[in-house]
Length: 242
Length: 242
Image (cartoon, rainbow over all chains, first blue to last red):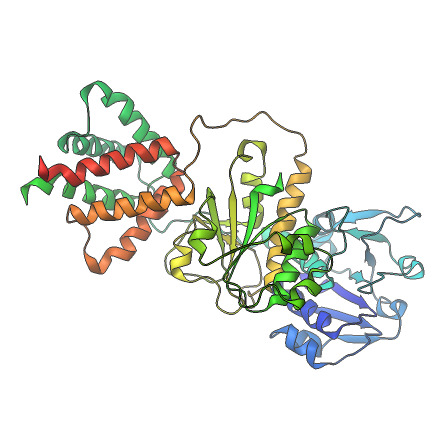
């Protein structure tokens, strides 16, 4: 689904940045890169910073100007950190992903355009864009490294794509959680153990057990963990019989 | 609100990466950087790649090992791309932000730990972490550049912070949470106790302790609870001396 999102870099000065962009893209399963009039490309710095994403560099299209580079695209978004006098329709990276990463739009091509490292996009280039693409950030230090900006935008597209497909990592356990019956046996055993080792003062028995329950309830023990802890209880109980 | 999230870099090889991390942090209003045994620091490459985030470099703490660097932290998250045999509780960057970027947690310190460029975090370092911190990404090309990884995590924290600008009344615990130093003393005591009562088979010592850490890390013990449990440990240790 991500192959219809195309990263377009305009007049990048440092070839290392082009390589770092390719790596950032591949980390997020993006593959389509277009370069408008890069200062140096191909270049050893690009290959080195790509760190294995050479395939993206190899297939990158090279264009003389932005208009040609985006000719086949249906929606063009220009990344821009600067406040501009002309108010352009804006989308954050996340809004962009939420709006367009879905099967209804899979036949459209989207250009995500990133300007020069020092000076961004020029006004005549922004005129070719349908939206400004914003990355929320510190207003007083808003210039992201080029590859970092591509990383964040690609990440948002990837996350939205995978939310429909892959389960994000949860706290998945191999072992089933202990059920209430097992936990009651666990607490009975704990209670008996701390009595056996002499810790439990009868007056405080209830409040101590309540505190211990709070701790282990929060931990949400699985059955294996219950077994291990009860193994420890047994050794503590038998400690004086050695 | 972001000042309680601390970026910890472990044995970074390239000083340029440290500078790029500082820039990525400042872009997202993060400020707290700690360096564990950096190969070269300070260094001109760091300053150059920081691109104006020199203040973060200047105030960065430098530590001999991870344990010392996180001693005052309450929750420790280790960034890891690799699948590991032991399943550790995992959070994505977004889940981490949603869980902890809110006023209820403003008195806690969070360490976000990033490992070496080539080899990540070692197992004994992951043992100090309560959670693995995951950035969803391409499974077949999952190694993000160090600064890119920090960029994505900082971005998620920033976005959640700006969404939560309205302060809610705190639901805070009566007792302060135990910090990493107190938890380390707790685990040392637990380790000694299960050795003393004869539970600990030397061959299985590491894996058992790792499992026990997982349980008590999930429980997020407060200092009073640590005192109670260590009281129980003492009684178990002395059980045969009665």
